[in-house]
Picture: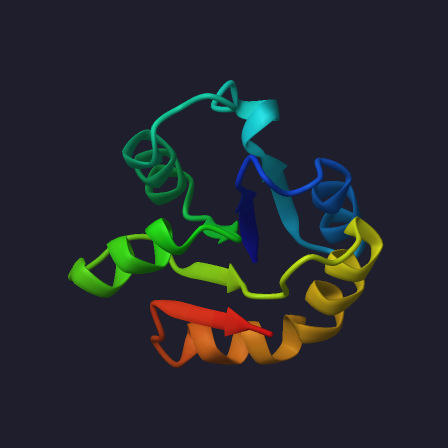
Length: 109
C-alpha cells in the first residue's frame, strides 16, 4: 500500500510505514508542504497513494467525489506523535481491508 502523509503529521511516520513494508511519503518530501489540498489530492491520485490526515477537509472531499484517493482520517485528538504512529501501525490490517472493500474514507480512532 502507498501512503501520502499530510502536513500536520510527523515526517517520521512515513519512515515507520516504510519499515512496516509500505510505500510512504510526507508532503514535505514531495514539495507539497504548503500546497493546497486540491494539489495534494491530485498528487495522491497520480501516485496511487492514500492520503493520511487529521484534516476533515480531505474526508469531505472524498465523500463528495466519485473517485480519488482513499483518505485515512486520523481522529485521535491531541495525542503524541508516538501514539499516532502506534495506532496507525496497529490499524493497518483494518485500513487495508476497508480500502480493498472500496471505502473512500477510513476513520481511525
